[in-house]
Length: 160
Image (cartoon, rainbow, N blue to C red; front, side):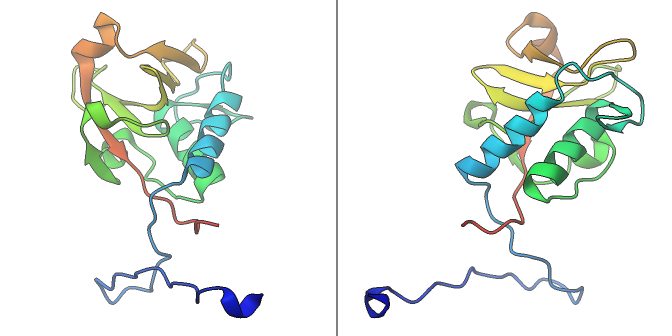
């Protein structure tokens, strides 16, 4: 019976500025994280293209991340790696969960490359000109030496 159901609880909203109210920020649920991972995996084998942010045009690393989060979670991330490195919440590498962003120093400057953590020490990324979107083992010496940090991005989609 409907009368036996508890009243729905409104999500807590934070009013911080006078800007138009944004949707509440929620931690992505397992289903949402799965959708983000599916979107990332669909991009496997896509061409790398500097400035690219679509399957049709190819992807660069930050374009791949922005595309996946926009498509799967409805989250508009900044376009550059450096800007993405300040989005969301910094997390300890020991707390990595699938869908988290992982950042690397690949151009002799910190926060110059980004990928999406898949789980079990693997991440997906768009590596460089002439290469395809692929997965990597983040425990390999190359990636361990270049690791800058990780971030978790909240979702704006409501938990259904």
